[in-house]
Length: 191
Figure (cartoon, rainbow, N blue to C red):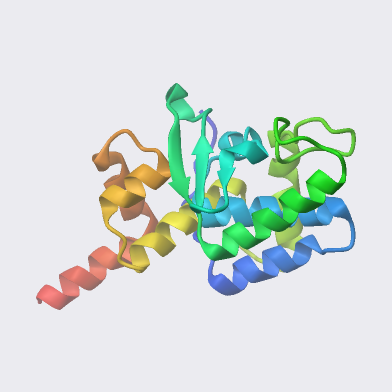
């Protein structure tokens, strides 16, 4: 098993700097921007995001159908206005490039599905350009999403469904690792 690093949640300023580092000049910049926003605003795993097709995105309901989830289970996740606006813009641009709704949402120049390897290399590169001095990776955007939901007071059962965890205990442990300071605050408030 590889080396395990502590979980690092990105601040709102760090997220904004990371997105700004994507640029908007080329269509690939806008694709990368949309993909990072999707990961941040939905908490999807990399493989789930890269398997999405435009027909999996319900812009009216603010819902995304994840057909290829971990463990082979399908689920539907919510996406907020920030994420929806960005994804809708990317879907329009992509459609204007001649791609159909049956093909994957995030494509390469040659129209092939974007690879996980590309994303695993690109995100740290963008983080360096944004001058973020912590470890930044795709799964960290999932951590950030979960942390933000919890900070907003979203029920743990809702976060469990959004993240696609089988067990509520998994979500509780996940959130505990993300926000250990919350446990300290609770302890100090009881004293």
